[in-house]
Image (cartoon, rainbow, N blue to C red; front, side):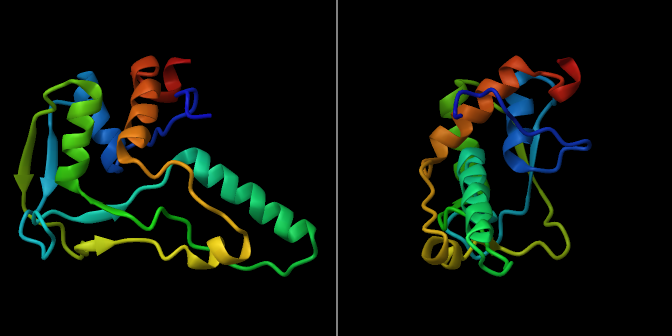
Length: 156
């Protein structure tokens, strides 16, 4: 459900949206963006973001696919839409209504400029279609969870 009742919690946290929301919530001081000289529209990395509900739907479709007797196979899952680090930051500022301090640091070694999933196979074979392709909606759902779980899973 996109009601914020489930969320993302890694230790240590390495994913952009949870890190940005930790800054918005005040549990992290600032966001560091690694590089602003990539060949992208604003110089920051571009990544594909997919809503957790869409991921769950794809897994359910994959289980049905296997139950129908098809062979196991691999599927890439993603929205097929890329957003830059700065676009994610601006969307998070809008959704959370927080300043979210950020700075630009050096590139990380080996970090590609753009990673966007080719999910055509999942769309064609499983008939999977992401329902939440709006980055504001993805961040809003994550923000609801972070507001109620400031210490991650450890606080419930």
